[in-house]
Length: 621
Figure 1 (cartoon, rainbow, N blue to C red):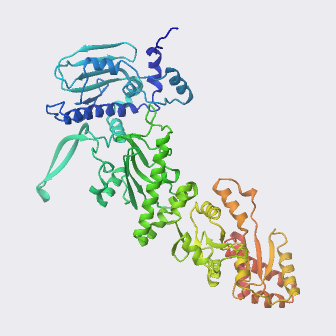
Figure 2: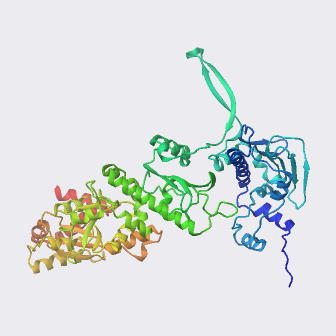
């Protein structure tokens, strides 16, 4: 038996590193600055333990761009490296499996795993990389390491330099964009603006005025340009923060003029480490669903705003920050790997959000109700998609009626069950999507003592169907639906003032006039003070059409189906219509009453509307 070690040929690996190690080449700056932060944090740790006893001095990290030399330098004053450490950390690549690496690259241009390759991202943008470093240990010599992206490298001693490390990139022709100051500053602000060590990039001009009025003198001063805030709000204790602090941090994140509705401060250290702040934003309208607003950090290093694998889908409408070193990332840190920790974090975030909402509801219901229209889409979406959230949210989810009153689900069922239970013992919850267009139907329903909900958000169609599925013996019916007749029959035992023979004559008249419409004609003994003719829509067919529209499908599969309900107790039907002698006048009057019902449903437009108005003027002239 023979045993040995499989070697990885670095000359075969370097071309892949240069082109495909990261999906975005600008990541090199984040990786180098992160390494510099690590080196500085290690020095501070050694100092705290008494290993380093000298003064630490200014520990800021500097980014220096030299356009003429075509170089970018990342300088830190951290722990530094000895010659032995340079050989150990820079000359070895920590691959767990070269074969898996290449297979993954061929699959989707990403490499899954922790390989310690951040430093080598430099070779994606540089023809040559130099590292000048001096260990914190006094007896160690300063060292220079040089590599041109090939297996060969050079190490030599150099003249004494301050403690720390300079990484100098000689930018290649394809990456000259990174020599632009504005480009570098934008990348630093994207990836590094909350790192715990000050990061300096160039200088900025501060303007002050000395004196007052016309004699005031403008004084301009060049000061170091510090990119980052080293102690962001989410890393602080919630007890040390006031409402103003949370609002200020929100505006720092999003440059928003609007304050958030409220926020949740996340802080847990077992069974995983996670901190962060999630904000409920003000949604300006029902179509404003802004995702990718939650930023993911790992130890204050920006990773991504694609957090759908950590944050439940319905909470991706929130804004804010999540920071966890325990979230598994691939080599590029831009894609998440699924494991048990991710599932635990998802569950924890959902639980904290539901606890916050329930707490707000219990402590100050009036304030909660005032915010409900803003948070309703998020809560409803969560109830549809997350079973555990549904069970929690039943306590604080609300329904709003046309009078602006708000009720929990249980409260509303109790409110309407006596009058709005149909002949099948189902509680019928009436609703409108356009209270203005349905005004006459709403008025009729309210006259009978019924209550009407407002369900006008794009998500409400799904939400109502989900509630029908989850809550026993509950149905939602639009106020202009034919299903409303079931309540009328149960609540008001109307008898027709017309004989069966006369009712048949009325139906024959309408069927003759509307024979080409395809509508169903019904003659019913409704309240005499109601409308003479109503147009209702079958609830099921209407919902199917709405679902089609939401999915961008053509409406042909579910054609419009209408019921024309003639009120046999209305004086215009029971008295006027049947007493007309001329058959032509009867037909004209039937058409007029039908068009009046269509007008009430916003169905008359163009030439038909003009004709209807002209005919109305004839009737009153």
